[in-house]
Amino acid sequence: MKTALQKNSKTIYIATLSILSIFLFIDYLPGMHRLTRWVTPPVALSLGLVFALLCKQAYPTFNKKASKYLLQYSVVGLGFGMNLHASLASGKEGMEFTIISVIGTLLIGWVIGRHILRINRDTTYLISSGTAICGGSAIAAVGPVLKAKDSDMSVALGTIFILNAIALFIFPAIGHALNMSQQDFGIWAAIAIHDTSSVVGAGAAYGEEALRIATTIKLTRALWIIPIALFTSFIFKNKGQRISIPWFIFFFILAMIFNTYILNTTETGAAIGSSINEFARKTLTITLFFIGASLSRDVLKDVGIKPLIQGVLLWTVISISTLVYIYWF
Image (tube, rainbow, N blue to C red; front, side, top):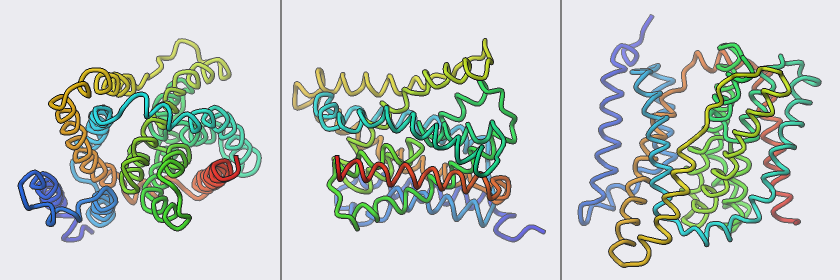
């Protein structure tokens, strides 16, 4: 039996999204910043999650497409606020660790899923790939190559999605509790959090430097989608499958190059780059509402306990090992 909230889910969805958008963009008006401070990435995600759990999904097709494409546009926009040289210099340490962590996460995930929890091959591999590289994007790229069933894809995506939502809340809090520097938190978030959206959201919540470092390292890490997809095709002998390449990553790099060598050479250009970057931060916040609203009770039921345990154990291992690396090496 539907509740009153579920019956009016579309109206509530439109009203919530409208209020969120209005408060985000009236920030451009002089003297309105005080009224818009509450609109942060964690708040936007929370609104989406609360809506999804109380009202169920509304406009699921629109919500899915909006979250996918708006995230990509937002990430490219963030590139206009970054300097190529500074980003590469500050993220060098994290990118070196990326090679070790990607391979290590895949191996540890396989052991946990297949040999300890006895989860089926495809779900184990999808969760491991999503944790190792960039969450849902990696799963979406590897799934067709693996010829995974829709049910396995849904379980893996649901597991990663739930953990991403949790990460956006707890990582900044843990970072502050450990008194982590902006650079250390950026490296940690980029490696230990799955999806680009949650990495960028957590980085933005922690600080400017953390956001820049986390975004650079995460998108470098996401490039591993291509070799992992090829590796998957070779190992599981599924040749001829199309590999989904995340082209928005290359556009992010082009935006960063353009900002470094063209826009930043003049005051007017620097102001344009800053404006694009600021607008991208606002659209990213809206994206997190869409992502939160994509969750549902059905997704929670489909995930089940074993895949969630695999995801949590693997996430814990990579989070702790990254912290050890940051503090001791």
